[in-house]
Length: 412
Image 1 (cartoon, one colour):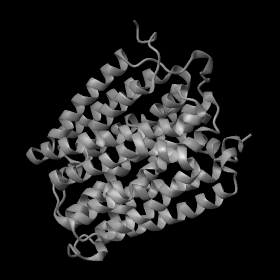
Image 2 (tube, rainbow, N blue to C red):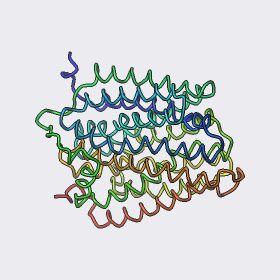
Image 3 (cartoon, rainbow, N blue to C red):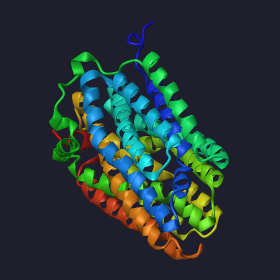
Image 4 (cartoon, helix red, strand yellow):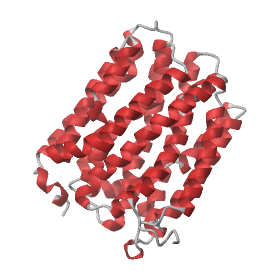
């Protein structure tokens, strides 16, 4: 049977995302350490980590709607395969980098190629009924979490041997993933649902404008901005924060990210469906946003490692935020615009992944010489808690004004 003849199913794209996230997770615990080889002190290490993360996010922001729009035109599978190959090139260049500027160039390439999550989201939208999409996005999020179960632990163990080794392994994982996508994954977008390519839809400003223009989802864009900014700040400062606070290395950070991945996987694969069935995706989204406030305050106030682990487990609803919000947005979007819509949402996160790391790492640089037990080291997480609280307040105001059963019809 040819690839085109296979029936698309969620399982196909989940394997693609899993391999992709394992490759990304392999490198995550060691990037700040690799940066540290080229910087003289903690402050410069923090700032350059933010610059490299911001460069990656900038290219993701530019590329996410472009890849989404291209996938609406030519199909999901070819876009995924080419992008995964580009991500593999990024990993290899990072492994060989002789300087920070070389690493910066590699991160620009990786960001452009790494904006594949929007295409994966569009693939899921293609093959699931509107009412089932929040649950399907939860499975996608669970796969993302599973990648963070396997990737960071392996990367942490390899990074203890050599900070560059995880990048080499990640490059190999990308090659395997590209072969899987080309030979196994079937196309999900039927020819009659394909849309002509339009630069207005493909550029990040046009895609964002189209998303904001939808009456039902426009206010949710602002919620997604605030949530994404807080999340990006946390993600890109986590390894530095735990290193400064607890003296953690790649191994310990790999274990902490493993626990995050386990919790995210359980929520996405099992808990999210039950929560949505019981309360609906609107109430789940609000619960998830509120949990984020508690999570960030808990991380900021943690003074021993066990507190980090306890907070991670107790605030498990946080991991339902993205699939719940995406499920609400997806139900207002026609079939021929799912790719560009998911691309716009991921483009928002990518834009925040430019601003968040620069803001977060510069805040952390200001207090990088503070004692390990000082509350000052929690400055990034206190800021994240404030942003998350604002997102919750805005979402509650908007969604309370729309009958829960009628959210999907509100853009009509």
